[in-house]
Length: 451
Image (tube, rainbow, N blue to C red; front, top):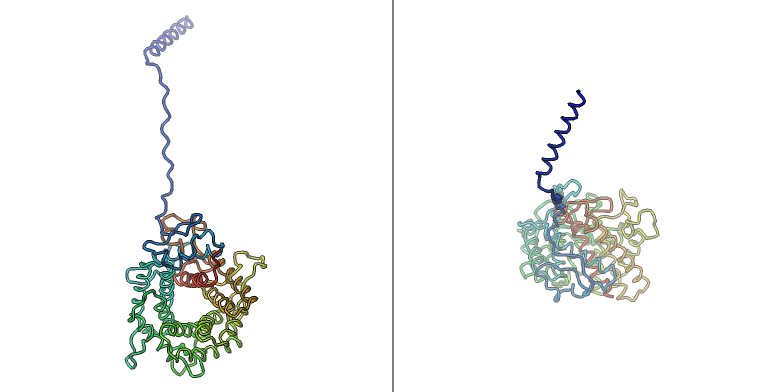
């Protein structure tokens, strides 16, 4: 009985379900929900320099008059050797980065730690002067009026940290103590920035001449340059490492001024200075002393054809080449073309940093003089060394391929075009990029092949 009742109830349920199914409209296959669009990273803000297309130069910054500038010599860029292409692109990328780093008051952002995304808090007037010099050189190379205006503003801002000597209206003196910023190095670099500025007016040239007069007063009868503040103290005792940089910068600025406004005392003090510091180099050689002194000695030879100046250039750069890390060293290929460092008076295998731009400029100056003197063996050696240094330098630059792990806007605004300090230090500093630019532009001006 119970079984019969169960079957009847089951039949009623089945019949009801069938009736409901018949009453439903036919089912239409439901389309799958639309897929959400895949969010792509927003593209980085456009920058003025892009990778060169075959047969063209990288796009120069806005307002650049390429056809009227030295940059046009490298058109089409794809026809140039790879070292030339790298140097041109490196210079143009740096020009854009330095333009972004310039602030409304005329100074450049000092530096940045990319790993922490934090600015480097310290600032330095000598580094700012190097940036002004590089910006003036870039403006001339590219023919860009905006960059020329930035360089002019940077120079004018730095001139406010100097004053005319009350005792001598022909002399302009840096205000800060050398404990804050070396006065000789700062005055020399700022004067060279003015001389390099395209279309510098007579007022600015007068300012540069006043700075050179300050440097003149630091030159001693024996040829040494007094680069510390105490008149009675020995500069080499107070700041032993300064001898490798500041005297060479002072003599270079004086010779740059002599090209613009020739005066007999400028060549006289440079000759004495070259003889004095050549002896210092022979007694205690240092790569930075060789590089900074070469610039002044090469310019002295170009202006006077004094053979001792050329001999000093060859001697110092023969030695500098021995400091360069060769491609036969298999330990760290990324260091090839860099230069070994000296720490605590001892040579180390630590690769060179921002000073590499000085070394490149030195090798290029030496290369130019060997060509004028038909010294083919040295020419080949110095040219090969300068090409290796160029490659090493451009490998230190932040570009598209080595910044993809950074957020797009950050890398485009803060990194692209900057040179980091060394293969083992990713921090960026305005003087590192400025010194690299000066070396690359000297390479392009003198040694770089067109074909």
